[in-house]
Image 1: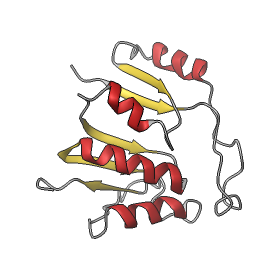
Image 2: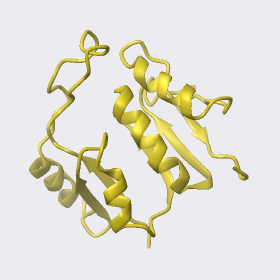
Image 3: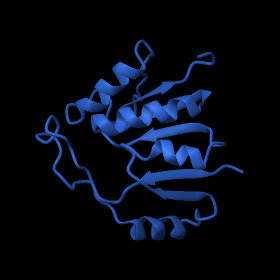
Length: 146
């Protein structure tokens, strides 16, 4: 019964002026068609649902249409402040207590916006790391209360 929801706008990164020196415009682009082919090749097309939207602004409307969704795991691989901030605002309330917010670039020099957004929106929560891999760089377990 588990579903995997993937979110992307398939246009690459568009950093703001504060992050342009760290991330190239239109970098990290992947086509929707290639991703769909990879999902199908792994026979995951029965559980993987792709949603094409701009995560920096389209989540309120998405969650109006999918008000029932709750998540056990949210993996943010955005890196840009505006996108990460908006995602945390909208996914954190839907993350099940005990669920995990996985952060690909927390506390990494190439994505200071991710760290800034986490500090602003989730102050005081422990950021845990994986001793056996470079990325993802950290995760937060949502407290059982709160």
